[in-house]
Image 1 (tube, one colour):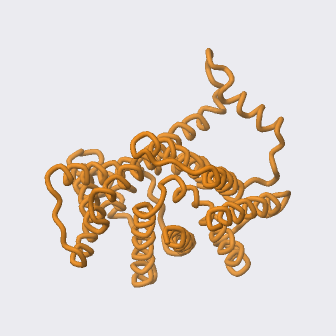
Image 2 (spheres, helix red, strand yellow):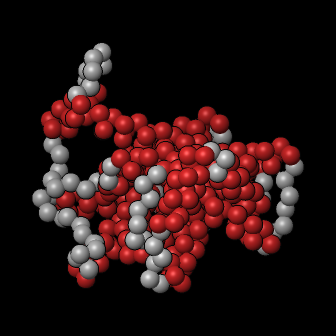
Length: 321
């Protein structure tokens, strides 16, 4: 059940990502502003509570608020990384590290381990996801990769070359983002073990909304948010825009539901499935709308993505059988 929900959620996310390419006419250049506009929608989750009304005790309420605020804090680092580089560089780093941190945190705090076959599937899915999501003009050979790592990290006792400092900041913010994403997923899993799914989810979203209100108390943050709000252009089709935002919310709820039913690390390791759906959509749309969607598939990139897709398919087979 959790596997089907997870795959469906990542498929929706892929569609939402492509739709955003058409609908969003202006990028948000501040991680604080991005986190604010994502978090402000959290209050509307309270309508879901009508389905299964539930009120937590004080201890449960405090944990719920902590989870929601942690998610908001995570978004800030996530967008910092995105703002510093292309998504094709950030997504592979975060996508590979979130399952690893999730595995470590869930093992330490939830005593949640993986059977030998599932652990192997976990490794296969991570590697497949990285290969599908990385966008290069050709495959990197071992020596080139080793030299780059050495140039970035090798001089442990001296200054890092100026040309690689942006890469170091990118890796730092991506790693912190992945760590906080994993911490959120493990904490929300703990909440779902102790609380009903709908109640735990909705009350944790209140924590995100309260965090958004606290952000407005900081003058510089408030000024950036107001400045961006005045400059935003309205999408051509507002109704379609609302539908896409609702689909994004649905995918987020489904991922949380999958986490409540299954293993945190395995759920996160399936992000590679999203890259496959995304690749198919982008290839299809790039032929129809080449000025909007482009996907470079020359110089070995297609081979790389086919290998990644094969690894993901193998990992899914190992989970199902």
